[in-house]
Length: 76
Image 1 (cartoon, rainbow, N blue to C red):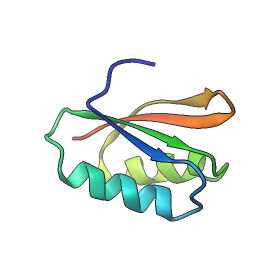
Image 2 (tube, rainbow, N blue to C red):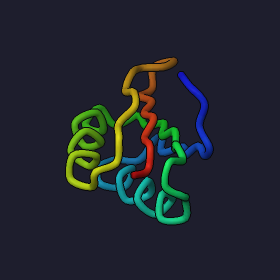
Image 3 (cartoon, rainbow, N blue to C red):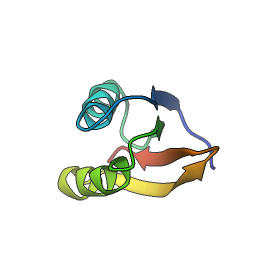
Image 4 (cartoon, helix red, strand yellow):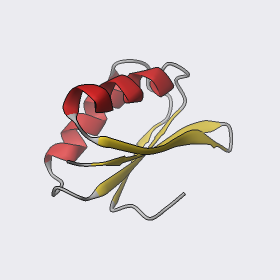
């Protein structure tokens, strides 16, 4: 995965906690910065797609890494 400014480990957390933690972390970030979120909840894939569609943030990538889900999200 590409470069990122901040990493959020949401492993072991279930919906909606990964989204809530991501939102809180992004509140402290500047526009254009990228956060990498790591989650284990299979529902996180659709949750982060919906979150980005609703907030206008850009989902740069979404995939599986070492049995976990990884997302790169750019703050807009």
